Amino acid sequence: MTKVEAARPAPTPYTLLCPPGWRRIPPEALLDDSAVQPILGAMKGAGRADLTLQFRALISQYRRAIRELHVFEVYLPPLIDDVRLPATLMVSPVVLPAGVDWDAALVRLSRGIEVSDADFTETPMWVWNRESWFGDDREVAVRERTFLVPVHEEAPQRRGLRFQYTILTPPTPEGEAAADQLSTIGDLVMSTMRWRSGSPRRVLPA
Image (tube, rainbow, N blue to C red):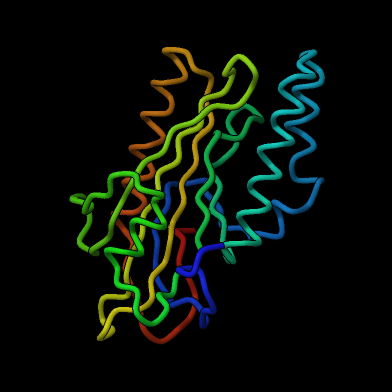
């Protein structure tokens, strides 16, 4: 945990529109072993003990991030043919400590990766991308796209929300095409992000 993720108040209410079938779950759901057993079972059934071990390691990373970043909401895409689309959107608060501005915070949070202004939404936000793999032979490609949205109505701006969108696909042309489509969906979802006053509820379509 860096200084940027220091003590924080309750998250600022916002609205977010998602495609049909997406659902919002509490982060504790990803901490429950029963939530990941179907995926692990499919890997074991395919005889991929190697991927099973790597997937467990990835879930461990998710769980560590949930705890360290104080994730308070998770969005999941729907099941298609009993298989969940390989994407996860996690939301966590960010609070700047005294003496740290957003320029310095972005360097820390992005770990030096290039940060850009999002050009697809009315709500000001920054975005950066990170790519990695897991598996000894890089069997699964991991795309992580992070959106940082400052609470712009505050003066000075000291708080924000981090939306971490992670996509898992095989490193094949088909997998890359699927990752591109899921990335586009992520941008469309984030383009609907708005701050709201009053009710603390976050809104999803019925």
